[in-house]
Length: 559
Image 1: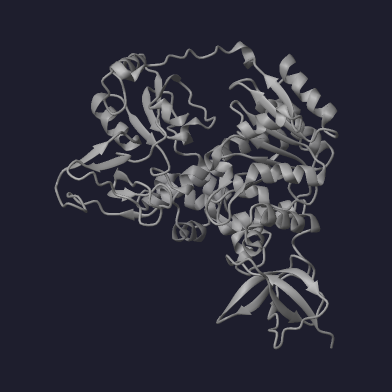
Image 2 (image 1 turned 90 degrees about the vertical axis):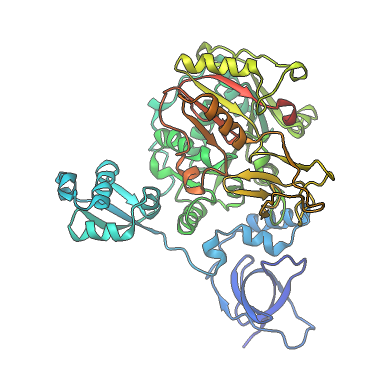
């Protein structure tokens, strides 16, 4: 029996591969289970070796894939990322697979759905008034008609409640197999808005030069209609039966964007990819895109590492956003990976921003990217008026001047909505001992820790380390601690005291879990008067129906 030797990369922070043997020929990228010290790991085939001088080579215990799930182009991209970012190749390989596959599992292309029956539609929920949770669940089913497992979680419906509704034949379980080929027949043209002259020029310029100039930067002011331009470019790509990757910086942006895309291209053509999805949902999206059964992938940073069957266009919205850079594990920029994929596959990449990064502007100046300017707002929308408040002669109250508070009061009294933006989480960004000058620092990072009040603790915003705060200094033990500056928690507390009759909502990552971000449920769905306080998650293109004033606190810190 013939014996083959293979270099296997392991999902460990090691800058080397390990040699194993197996009787069969294995393709590059194939997942295998191998023994490593006293445990078993899922590794990835790097290359076949002609022979090995190593004695007593361990054997591959299990081959997980009949065929490699990664094509040659994806393996080449992994090699480039590993080389360019000096990252362990095993960790890069691992990142190209969804969590379910990293654990050695296979993908079941079916999804459990719970659908309301005809009896369930007719039944009056008051008949379940003695079973309040069943009544509430039935009301959701009557509205939504069917829910997936993640949909049940989003609406806080337990499996026990669903089983009771199944027993009463109000709800039935079915298994849906997602095997829809890319379709150009589901494009709904009535939802495409007519492009104005400026939008049309940018669209046509990109179309004309797409084959010769691969990288394009759309530099357009907020409200200029950049999104509608790339919707039309997506349509052209779908008509050619190719796939599209659309990257956005935040999970909270995906629900509304997915809904807009589904209106134009059909629900069967769109997949999502982000960390708030369940492992099965992520694996299913990954598989459908990899096999070419979905044509559009909307996702955050990690979606840039998804292998496509026939990718034809990449769009990076808000390309300047720092969220595209990964700082945990191996470090990379999803935007730069997208540009490399564009060059490698000879397909266009569209970078969009109202405030482009300096790197992209430099690439435009050097003619590496094509620059497209959009300076007009659509539908003759008015430009906002800007005022700069000099803080040197102003007394601050939680970072706000009396003038700013007066403007907030005016808008709230008119019944309007106000957004107060401060890109600092927590209550007090700086804690200081007035006796000895001590400040609490993270034991891992040596950076100053931030004081949070809900619950009371010190938090490192770099690595996430937390520890209890004491009433006295940790060095001189004097009870003389001072809390400087303001974060969103402090602003929220102050504004709630100042504007007692107006609702105040704080929106930052401390306040909402991934499920809420995934469902985009952090905005109150109303146009009533309110004050929204938050970090950069508020400034990501969300629709706030009655917003008339934005106050940027400590604007210098964002420069």
